[in-house]
Image 1: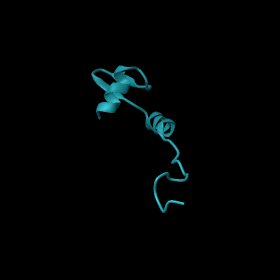
Image 2: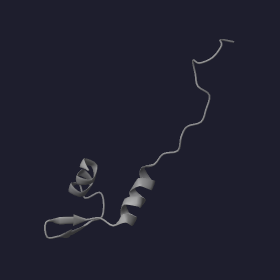
Image 3: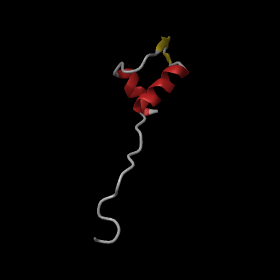
Length: 52
């Protein structure tokens, strides 16, 4: 909940203010989550396993 309030206060997410209530479209939230989602890094882990 705090993240949403920070995004609204910083005007980093689209919203509509209806009186004292703030409304955010589900499509806006979905797009924001997709933008913030990172791909996992697949690679060789250093320092694990037998020493060659």
